[in-house]
Length: 229
Image 1 (cartoon, rainbow, N blue to C red):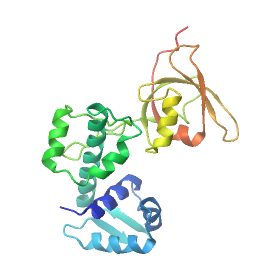
Image 2 (cartoon, rainbow, N blue to C red):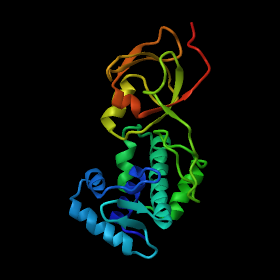
Image 3 (spheres, helix red, strand yellow):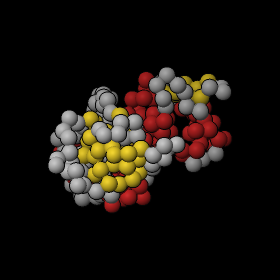
Image 4 (cartoon, rainbow, N blue to C red):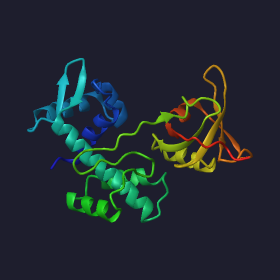
């Protein structure tokens, strides 16, 4: 069993690694809030483990091996199942579950993880819309687009929020924006300005404004329905 520090590194590498690309140690240091030297020491340790968990090339960065990816997905599964359990069963709001799951994810057994999954009837998504890996490591693919790239006039359903910042999630709550919320893009200001959306299916629903960084973190699915008169 990996230590908590090892699991944190593996999960973080998985979350920020782009397909076909390596993760720079400087990016890891920034996300984890540690020094570059600490990252270098841990990467050396991970690359020497058996089975080998990461592949590291000087000046090119680090990538997970198949064993490293499997271990990272196991941590991610525990985390997202815990978030879902906290939300559905214990009534935690979506802005509270991430920090609590971070504390617990390294301290529950595979048996308890499986029991939680069974109790929740094997959910596919967590409270933020993030896909939950299966025990095998498979994860449901999703062909979302961002709210930012949604054309003006399109009506869409919010499917995922790629952000764990509790303040942002509470702000979205205040705007009436959550998973499954139906919104219509009303206007996009020029020169990287904010976008205006109608929140709700009715034409008289309130108009809200979001910055481009927030809109880029909101993933949506297109729907064919037009707003009701």
